[in-house]
Length: 432
Image 1 (cartoon, rainbow, N blue to C red):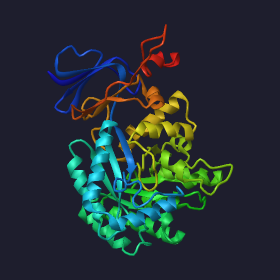
Image 2 (tube, rainbow, N blue to C red):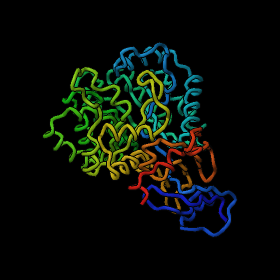
Image 3 (tube, rainbow, N blue to C red):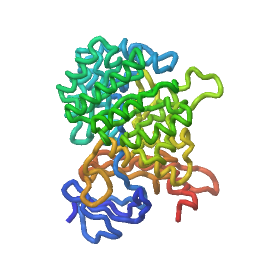
Image 4 (spheres, rainbow, N blue to C red):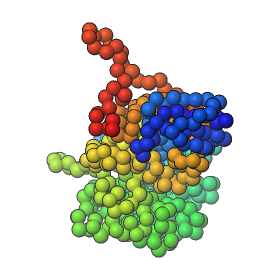
């Protein structure tokens, strides 16, 4: 007896028509046909069943704060930072918790069950850390929330940056963050990378730094981060987020840099929606795309995962908590429109992100956690094209969210009465 069986499922690796049996919150069987009953059954009807989406880069302390205390008129990164600086003294724990919980509700409906959030530690009150630690505990039954101690105003640049970050880690924030390109000088940025990697090594923690989020090709803190990763033996435990300066760097320098990053086993986290919105602001035409070199980094064997970064906050007035929207944009910006390209993009919002976050038991194999989503699409390429409804979101073998299929009704003589934009429009090349 299984607790749940999902029947006639297509998997992200291309296998079709499989049943997935769940017992005690874990995947217990995957087979062409499971000929026993279950407490609950879901007919996937040839639709895609995937592990849930993961967002390895988000700012939950700022989410849903759009318009507080005013709008970002220029739409730039620097005005966003200034705006957040105006809002920060006004923040209360209660308001932070309420906004974060509302966002987590949205995330669950989108099949997003794993999130890594940076937590601003620049205000010595650390109300952001208190609030997000409370949220982490509250949402633990349905979302795994990882927290990064993030010195938004600079580890050295902020008056209490050093002591506040240490205190946040002592409170239970489990990842060391940084923002070297926002220090006053390149030298201070490099010093901050070394100091923060030393802290991570001493405490046995991972590192996730905002790194080179700029159009300046001379912002090369990722090189320092790779070197310090090797120096402190942190290989595989370090993430470089954004890395947008790479879109402007000299190709010869990048040909040296990428192997250094591979040697250090750096996890790379571009944020396609935010990067293309905030970068290239000083350009007239031609205007730079603003995203790091995704295709080249993937080709070099680096683990590349995509983050959503922001939803309706001082930096980004858009956003929906939908990682397929992130992947959809990445396809366009990285110009990765081939079928194999799209599979790699889908990996970047699922299995690659799970690797970046160090998740255990994640995946679609027997013995993995029964955390699953059923999408209104036949395969990963169609999921990225359509950004379809999440018909079922399953956590530990139990349905935690459900959305009705999106079906359009027609009232046209001689034409169908309804259309399913996924099922009815799968190209022949994808039907084989």
